[in-house]
Image 1 (cartoon, rainbow, N blue to C red):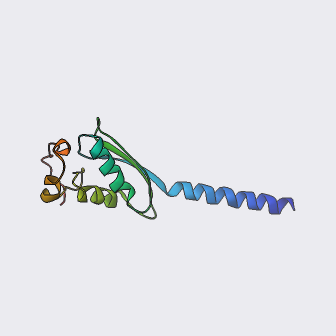
Image 2: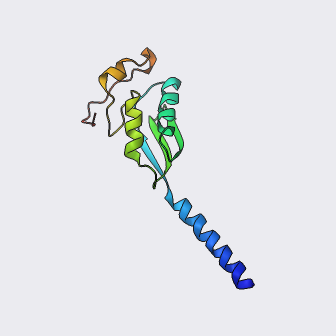
Length: 116
């Protein structure tokens, strides 16, 4: 009886550890200015299946995103953010989408060769 209980406890611990190992946290540079930008950026990141946490800091322009690595990746998150008008370190928002942002949300666009 003791071996069965110990076996079940061991399996539970292994499952718990493997589920935790799939969660990954990344920091990504995302351009924006204000709290409206923050809401838009975080909402776009959280719209990707597998993202559990998205927190953008307007002072540092850094997004901290936690996601299940077996369901998504940081590239999908950055593409979603670029689609709503915010440049990231890897993807540039389309000019038409950027131009539709409110005046307070128009940031100085980086001169990088990010993908469109």
